[in-house]
Image 1: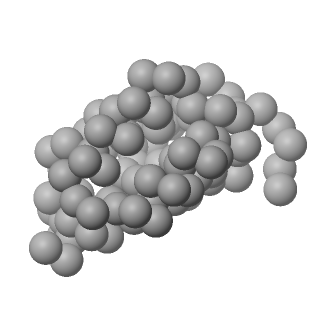
Image 2: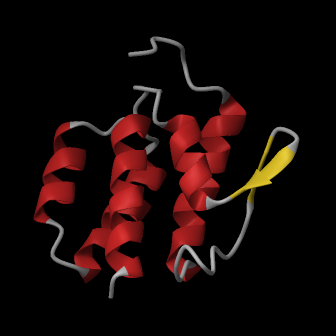
Length: 104
């Protein structure tokens, strides 16, 4: 696992992706593209970009991500993020939420 700290622009991009999930519909309709460095990326691509970092999620990002889990029965996702509040697990959980929403 990479021991580097998450760069601030990656942390902001993930926070933006978590906020954008509220309006995300499906992979075919990815919604808002998130700016990162010199490009714009889907929520999935932002998750891939941050899932190498073990830094802890800021409380407000954790709280927002966790709040989405109240809408569905996400026992496994809740258990994961309650044990490890890292960007890596946050990205895993956001992708899990996207997968569940895409198949509803």
